[in-house]
Image (cartoon, rainbow, N blue to C red; front, side, top):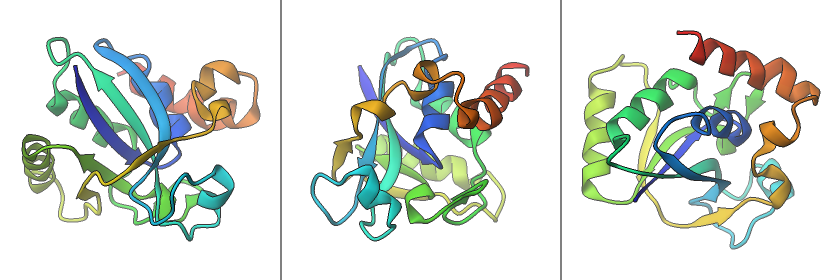
Length: 163
């Protein structure tokens, strides 16, 4: 089993797509690489902790590669907007890949180098990870009828999986 950490805006959207990918074993929404210990969602929303909203992805490397995860990651969010995805604004919504080894770092950098010059995605070593509160886990599946899920997450799922 391998692990990847991606920040591509609101973790609910990122989680909802990766939940439907073959080879994913477990997902955990959370916060990483900030300057406070055990942050809460309220702390993160203030935009002063330095943490990013991330999804920790545990995957079976024999069924899906880190490179394929990178392909999906870059397809499901806008890597050219600094600290913003749609209406979500702030450093907690930055585009970032938090690597855990040199191989992940090199693969991420190589992929970015093949893309547009406008990419603002950070490639940073994972320093710390804190799981988000329970109500953030499996958010879309547990809240299908909520407006955010219907207006933002459902269209992203439909767009990605209709290709």
